[in-house]
Amino acid sequence: MNKKFNIQTILVAPLDWGLGHATRCMPIIQTLIDNGYTVMIAASGKQQILLKQAFPTLTFIELKGYQIQYAKSKSLLPLKIILQIPKILFTIYHENRWLRKTILQYNIDAVISDNRYGLYHTKIPSVFITHQLLIKMPFSWLEKLVQQINYKFIEKYTACWVPDFQDANNIAGDLSNPQNLPKTPIHYLGLLSRFQLQKDISIQYDFCIILSGPEPQRTILENKIFNEIKHTENAILLVRGKPDSKEILTINNKVTIKNHLPSKELNIAMQQSNFIVCRSGYTTVMELLSLQKKAILIATPGQTEQEYLANKLMQQQWCYAIEQQNFSWQNIVIASKEFQFIQPQFPTKELSSLIASLMQQLDK
Picture 1 (cartoon, one colour):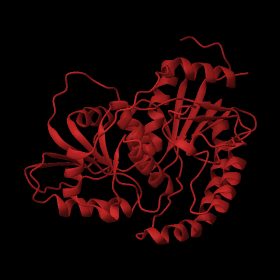
Picture 2 (cartoon, one colour):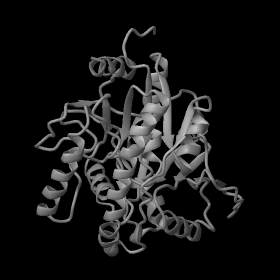
Picture 3 (cartoon, one colour):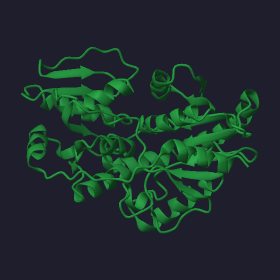
C-alpha cells in the first residue's frame, strides 16, 4: 500500500506484565508493516527477546518496564501491589519524559501503547490498547475508584483500541464492555491472535502445558506441575515461558520440555495437542479461542482479571478452570475427559482494513 498520509513511523510499546501484551501486539505490528508503515518497537527483557524473534529486521529501542513483583501468597498480593504504587507512578512519569525525547530523536509520528500509561503525547496521535476498561477489585468502592484513575490516564490518549467485541458475545465480559466508557473514542478490534488455524495437523501430545506470567507465581506453578507429572503416562509438551533461559530439564520420556517456542512453532505445537493447560491471561485466552482448542485454565492467584476470566469462561463452558491451590494433575486428566467443552463462534473482522481505517482517522 502506498500511503499518502502524514503518519509514517509508528512506535509500538507493550507492557512488561507477562508476555501477553507483547504477543497480542504481533498481529497489529504485522498489519502496520503490511500497510506500509515503518514500525519501531520499545521493549526490554523477555518482551524484547520475543518480539525480536518475530520481527528481526525492525528497530528496537530499550524502554525499561514496570517490573511488577508478585507475592507468593494470594492474600498478600493486594498489599504487595499497593507498596509498588510509587514505583509504578514513577515509571509512568519516566516513560512520558522518555517518549518526548524519543519522538524527536527518531522522528516518530504516532505511538501505540499496550497498557503503558505514560506513552501519550499532545502533538502526535497516541493510541492506548487495553481489554480492561474495568479493572476488577475485591470491593465495589475500590473498583469505582480504580476505574476513575484508569480513565484519567486513558483520556490522555487520542484513541483506545480494545481487543474484543462490542456485543453480548464478547470474551472479556464486564472488563471490556463496562456500563460507563471513557471520553476517549473506543474502537473494538475483535479477537487478536498471532496464530493461524491450520488444517491436516496430526495430534502428537495429550497435553500442551504453557507456563507464563510474573514471578514468583510462574515458578510456583511450574514446581507443582513438575512434582505431579513425574510418573505420568500422558504425552506432554511443557513450554516454560522463559525465552531467556538455556536450561536443559528432563522429567521422563513422556514429557518434552522446552524453555520457549517461537510463535510459529508454538502455533503448530498447540494444534498438535488435544488439550492446553495454561494461565487465564487474556491474550492466551484469545489465542486458544482462535485455534478452537480445549483448555484447562489456572488463574494466577490474586490476579483478579485472570480469576474473573477463568470463572466466566467456565460458566460458559468455553474452558475448564481450576485454582492453583487445588492443582491436581489427576483432576486435570479427569476434567479433560468429562467436561463438556463448547467451542464459540465469533464474527470475522478483517484486521488489515480495520487498522488501516483507524490509522486514517488518526492521520488528520
